Amino acid sequence: MTQTRTARPMDGTGLARRIIDTSAATAADIRGRTGTAPCLATVLVGEDPASVTYVRMKRARCEKAGIRSRHVALPASISTSALTEKITELSDDPAVHGILLQHPVGRHIDERAAFEAIAPDKDVDGVTTHSFAAMSFGLPGFVSCTPGGIMRLLDEYDVEPAGKHAVVVGRSPILGKPAGLLLLGRNATVTYCHSHTSGLSDIVRQADILVAAVGRPHFIAGADIKPGAVVVDAGYHPGNVGDVDHASARDRAALITPVPGGVGPMTIAVLLAQTVEAAGRQLGVN
Image 1 (cartoon, rainbow, N blue to C red):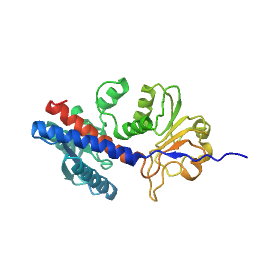
Image 2 (cartoon, rainbow, N blue to C red):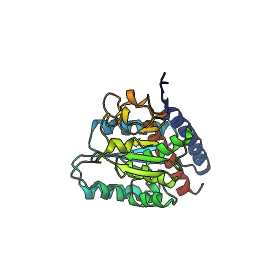
Image 3 (cartoon, rainbow, N blue to C red):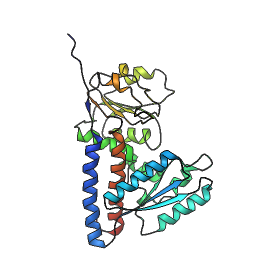
Image 4 (tube, one colour):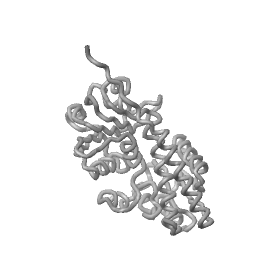
């Protein structure tokens, strides 16, 4: 008789809560020693409902963690030059320790130019080329929050990437690409794939660690999961579904991140942790 496998869920909610609690304690210490609370500036262009919700949630988490939140709401019609000017002002403001530009920002805006206006020491979302390069070379800096959260989840569940074949499905500069680099830095053998990859199912079947970050619901079939694999689903779509078909994947994977409650909470937790770290550096208490 064949034994049925049921994947163990990787609880991002619980781990995120502990990270935020630690960040809150550090923020309180910084405030007590300097009289200044860590401050995160959130920049929102337009009124996209999902973006408005995300920013509101991040600001609420800031408040609970003792991090001051400065919200900058800008019109959807804003130009690239006006947006970069506003971000540069925040970069030059010593009362702001971290900057988050909520994306997307509108097709008429040069998003990369907007990201590059963020000072590297305030890039707590890890979106600038400076942060990407530092992460690539293993130098001090801030990692992209979602990939950073993924690595913390792997560590929490004693998943050692060294010697493993990691397959990353997705090539976003703030998710897929940095996730692969962080895994490579931990001595995994990394294969990058995307929605146009030929023979994708065959490659996915080789993955000891699978990171699904392609942005398409149920794009990865459970039948393509290697038995005993660790599955990190970084997708989120209406109906609380991810990039992986969880109903079938749970019968093959050893570990899997739930959607929701897996990668999402970790992204915010890393953002807050890096904001507190940035404040400590800028205020000279680290």
